[in-house]
Length: 67
Image (tube, rainbow, N blue to C red; front, side):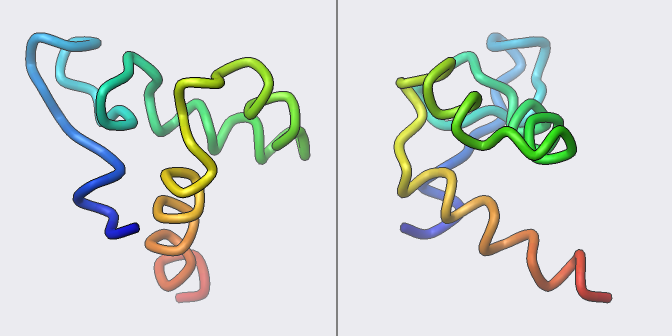
């Protein structure tokens, strides 16, 4: 899945914070769970976020992390 299909920024949703498309789940929340090494907790807590969406966000962030 392309990143642009996985996320969206809408001023009417969560004050314009970057969220997973079609949800009110902020992308930053995924990274917070990763900091705690708890990806399974994120997936069970936010079932509206598909595995494909998660992979798109993590895949897009990998180049930025490796710099």
